[in-house]
Length: 235
Ligand SMILES: Cc1cc2nc3c(=O)[nH]c(=O)nc-3n(C[C@H](O)[C@H](O)[C@H](O)COP(=O)(O)O)c2cc1C
Image: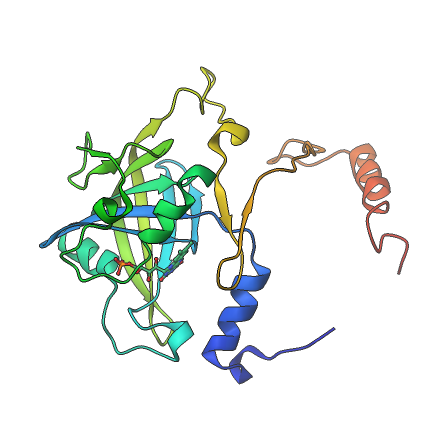
């Protein structure tokens, strides 16, 4: 095994290992509203946290971040806007919108609305002030819970709560199951230009419902099946 002690690594190298190993990452195409108007940017340090209410996290570096050696202290527009107006619309990006998403990652001044540069269609949101991108198959109208500063750069951990779901009819059925094939969500990998699509799926049901103890028989079955995996024969 190659071994790396995290505190011995340069910030750029920490970034390479984190973004290369923790893959694929979903992408939050995030519209916020600032004093100069709407802003849109993609973030792949993004995931759901839980429900009741539906909650998610996005982590945003400073304007000059881990790929440029450190921070000057300036905020990205997304964080500055959320401090100004604590609402956002998070969109899931599909393969057919990849170039538009990428255009929104350009570092524009705060008075530039990236949705217009990218040619996205927008509409007023129902419960929040930032507009939503109607081209996206999933649009999550959201409120900011809080922004936590993490680490020394620092990173800005944005915690949000979804207040309204806009889901394309083709993406969700009447039992609220989302079809991953139709959603065709982009996944972010490492490096300059690394992405993936969900083209290979398999099922692996829970051996026992979470939240209660499995029977001895189930544990034995779990052991047997686990031993068929790679390295399963080794001690
Ligand atoms: C696919 C993708 C994922 C990205 N993920 C992040 C991220 O998780 N955190 C971050 O700070 N920047 C991320 N970026 C870079 C931001 O999108 C970029 O800095 C953008 O200009 C920020 O815009 P803003 O200043 O308008 O908020 C990502 C860019 C791309 C293309």
